[in-house]
Amino acid sequence: MDITGQREFPRKLSILDFALILVERKRFLLVSMTLVSIGAVILTLFVLRVKYSATAVVMPPRQTYSSPLGSLLSGMPFDGLLQQSFGMLNGDAGETYLSILGSRRLAEKVIEKFNLVDRYGFRKKRKYYFEDVLKKFNKNVDASQGDLGTISISVRDTSPEACAAMANFIVEQLDDVNYQITRSRAHFQRTFFENRLSDIRRDLDSVHVRFAKFKTEHSYLDLETQLSATIQTIAELEASAMMVDMEMEVLRGKFGSDNPKITEMRERERAMQRKIAQYMEKGNGDIIIALKKSPELGIEYAYLMRDVKIQEALYQFVLQMYEQAKFEEINDTPVVEVLEKAQVPQKKSQPKRSLICILIFFAGLVVNCTYVVAQKWFAVQSAHDTETARKIIQVVRNLKAWK
Image (cartoon, rainbow, N blue to C red; front, side, top):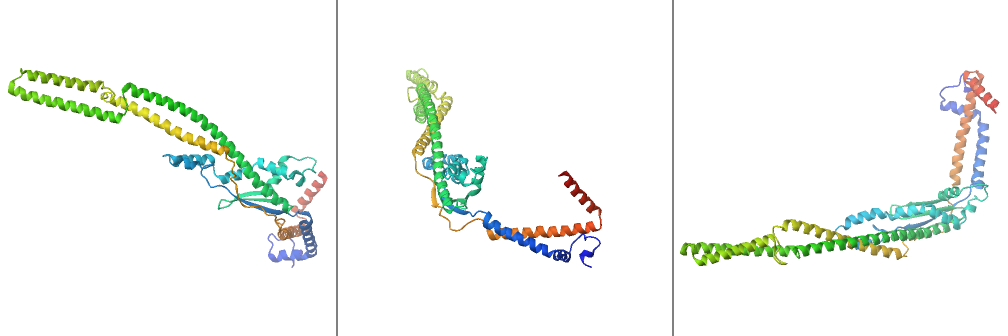
């Protein structure tokens, strides 16, 4: 028995059942698929507009800094940390280029230059927003970075000459906008480093004054040399005092304690001890320093010297940064390297007529087959007056009454 004679529609269709239903409505399917095919051809030939695509390729500069600043810092002991920090600050050149290419600033220049409001047909509309023009522009412009670091800028348009001209104009504007951003950044950096240099110079002068005052007050001219001289002088005095003491012991054994020579040598020893005590407590002149005060004074001396060295290193570093920022501010060398200029394309890129026709054909086939099977199912349900059929009919009536 064929499917038309079944009392109920099968819950699961086999391939044979499905084929029987389609064969039964073969005339309908043939006509409908012919109309779908004709419609697809008309759509691709007369409705969809032909578009061309032109591509320009640029190479961002390879750099850690925004300029040759690394060469200035390479000799400094902390250049690795500085390069990492400034590399993070300036960012990758490729990412900067992609940000510029996706910016509204550049898009507005292209839209104005090529009158894309008219070209995209927005002027014919009664009301439109500039954001709509931007949205369509961004659909027709693609910018991507390749594995080798190159950036490709592709533009689609109905005119091959226009898309090539737009791609090359975008490259020109990329260099111009990047130049303005670099100049603005360099101006900000120059101003920042100029102010910072003034502050550091003032701090350095203050530290130098305090350090000089400390050295003058405590006779600290060259701490290492002075300590060596002081220790040597005191050691010689103590050695002389010990030798005098030994001579007194020898004389005391020979002539007794009341010998005038012993009294004279005792006075010499006391004088030496007073001299040692003076050197230990107060020092003497510019060479001999007070050893008892030297630990505390040495620590203060070290702190002051550290402050001086830090300020001098900062001053040298900021001075180099300031000079480099001045160079960048007046530098007008273009940094965008064009590897390939966009050429006028000879072959269209859109639409893919064959692919569109095939997709429409199969989509129409699925829809028509679904319709045929659904119609057959509803016919069987209606013939047996099932509850499902009654509900569907009631829903349709209610919809018609609602209209």
